[in-house]
Length: 107
Image 1 (tube, rainbow, N blue to C red):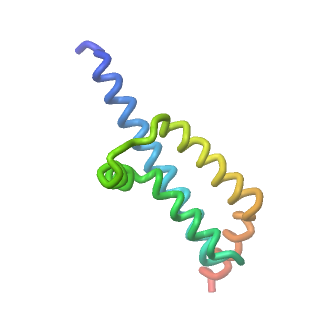
Image 2: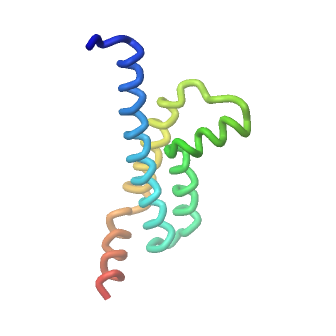
């Protein structure tokens, strides 16, 4: 079996799709924690909305609705991910909110 450029490109696409789904679920969970166990539910909803960028069906729907794609989407997703992590871990005090969530769930 030869390793053709099309096969390599397809394998890279599959890996990028899996990574995109993982980060989408992670950022969605961060948004849920911030919505229900934080002092700013608007921030959590904002993070949830940003997490939809990482879900592939949403990308396809937006492409069909608008008729264009954003070049360099991988770089945009990386920068958006850095922003979400910075906002949730640094400013949003995510670990404190997770502790509050765990205390609520134990009761």
